[in-house]
Structures are given as C-alpha cells and as structure tokens.
Image (cartoon, rainbow, N blue to C red; front, side, top):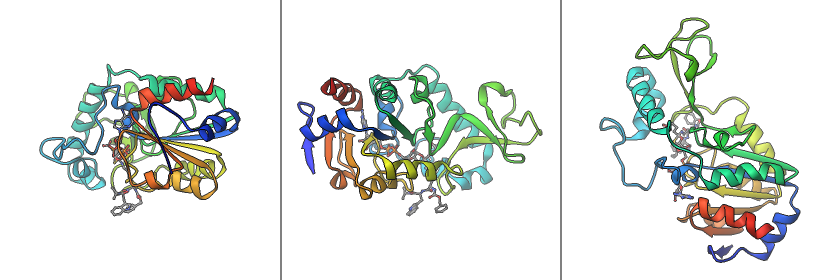
Length: 251
Ligand code: BJW
C-alpha cells in the first residue's frame, strides 16, 4: 500500500487517471461532511434522537414499534438538509462522469447531494431521504409530492401508510442495487472509496470485490479504516480538498 499525502499523488494513479476507461466511486457520509451533513460514526454522538442511538432509531424494529418517531427523526433531518449545498467533492465526482468512458457512482448516502451536484444514474445502496415508500402497495413517492399534514404520510395511490425509502439496520438493500454495484465493481479498473468508515455491509464489500477482480483501489479519508490495508493507495485528507486536486493532477 502506498500512502500519499495531500502533497502528492503516485505516478501509478496519475497514469491510471489518464488511461482508465472504467472507473467506479463508492461514497459514504464523509463526502457530505464538508457540506455540513453530520457523519454517523466517530463524532462521539451516542444518542442522536431523543436519547436513542441511530442503530435504534434507524432500525427496522423501530418502524414497528414507533413509526411516528421514525418520521419525526427523518423530518428533522430533511429540515436540516434543506439549505445544504453540494461541496467540491460532489462537484468533482459529477465532473468525472464526463471524463471517463464508463463511470459508476455508488453511494451509501441518502442526502441526494450527488444528484444536486449533477451526478446521474447514481446507485443508491441505502435509499433516499427525499422519498417515501408505501407499506401496502410498495409505490415510491417524492416527499415533496405528498401532503405532510399527517404524523405518518399517506400513499397517494392506495391510501396506505408510508415509510422513509431508506435502508434501515437489519433491512435488505433495494432489489438489484447491490448486484448492479457489484457487477460494476468487478469490471472497473480504478475504484475510489471516498468518505466511508467501511464497516457497514454489504456496501463495504464493493471495494473488496473491485480489488479481488484486479482494480486499483484508492481510499480518500482523513482517517484510516478497516479497508485501508487492502487499498493500493490511501489519500489522507478531506474529500473536498483531495478530489479537486486529483482532477488537477490529471490535467
Ligand atoms: C471524511 C470526511 C471528509 C469524515 N472527507 N472523509 C455483523 C454483525 C451485525 C450486523 C451485521 C453484520 N454484518 C452485516 C450486518 C448487518 C448490518 C451491518 O453491516 N452492521 C455493521 C455496522 C456491523 N447491515 C445491514 O443491516 C444492512 N442490511 C443487510 O445486511 O441486510 C441483510 C440482513 C438482514 C437482516 C439481518 C442481517 C443481514 C443494511 C445496512 C443499512 C445501513 N443504513 C444506514 C442508516 C440509514 C438510515 C439513516 O440514515 O438513518 O446507512 S447505517 C449508516 O452507516 C448509514 C450509512 O450509509 C452507513 C455507512 O456509514 P458511512 O457512510 O461509512 O459513514 P460513517 O459515519 O461511518 O463514516 C464516515 C467516514 O467519513 C469516516 O471514515 C470519516 O473519517 C470520513 N470523513 N470527514 C472524507 N471531509
């Protein structure tokens, strides 16, 4: 593993950046940190909402125990997100879509900031905070289209109760999303892992799949993660500083 600081990028990565035709990026909460979105781990925050840790309030069990509380929690977070903007990391990744022949963006984030920066066809492994899903008919709706005058929003198709369209702890990922990401990981030449603690599975296995299939794997994170030793290169620092610098290194 090569460790490269903000002062330099290896020649191997520089060269791959010029020649790679198939590039995959996996992002986590850290990519949105510089936009003001709190990350999940490492902040010392054990109680995130009304005394509950997020493993409890954001769990499948909580949907059954107290759906209203789950909605309060997600409404609060949407309110906080409303005014936040994409940062240079989101913008740089959106630009890469045009630079590489085949480009795949896979995110664990539910904040929609990649799309706000212009990224298209994003594989969202953990859903999206701006959407709801009906318990009864399964239909998804943009929350901006729903009347929010109930504690629990109601489906405009069937009148059933809705839930946030987000993958909570203990739930399966959306059908096909992981499979598509894994397929792209198997075929990419260069894989960036940006701003994730790489502890939540199966998402954290995407770079492992890419590495096993022969891709050059690069981590961008201010902290070491369980994945760091598996990576070919670690760029230590903030995504909003490192990624624009990488794009410049290519030119
Ligand atoms: C920066 C930065 C800057 C800071 N620039 N970087 C073994 C034991 C027990 C359970 C399991 C197990 N193996 C698998 C499981 C199940 C579980 C799991 O993985 N648990 C582990 C934690 C142990 N997985 C699941 O439940 C998944 N489903 C599943 O496996 O289904 C099959 C199944 C069903 C039933 C039973 C068992 C299996 C689903 C996981 C869904 C996770 N959903 C969440 C919450 C979403 C809802 C909500 O938002 O409230 O998604 S969890 C949370 O973690 C969120 C994130 O997407 C996810 C990943 O976090 P991420 O993005 O890595 O953020 P952080 O905060 O952890 O890290 C931020 C990083 O950024 C840090 O490294 C910083 O250093 C860095 N950083 N500033 C760059 N400026």
